[in-house]
Image (cartoon, rainbow, N blue to C red; front, side, top):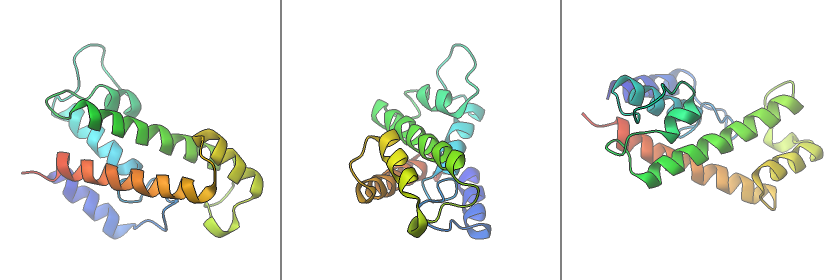
Length: 143
């Protein structure tokens, strides 16, 4: 519950600008990082070589902490967010502005996500963030 309180404080102090603020949106990168960090701190990562990166930690969440479906969902979300943020950072010097996306960047974002158009990409991003937030609430808002 402490992680959920910290996340709520971040959301209050620094709210996301829009859906494309992938780090700060509810269900975005920060939520995934909190899930991974809590799992490490509480020993909810499968044994073996010590996992250090968020993607690796999410892929090795212990079965007693999450079921295989949620583990896959979290890993897929992290991969999506990473692909989108890396591409936008490579192509833009400032913040991503939804109404001013260069056509070339739009094409690149569709290519890295294998989606047919920008509307579908945005719907997928929104749906993914909602799933991650639901998982965050399930895993970290207890107690």
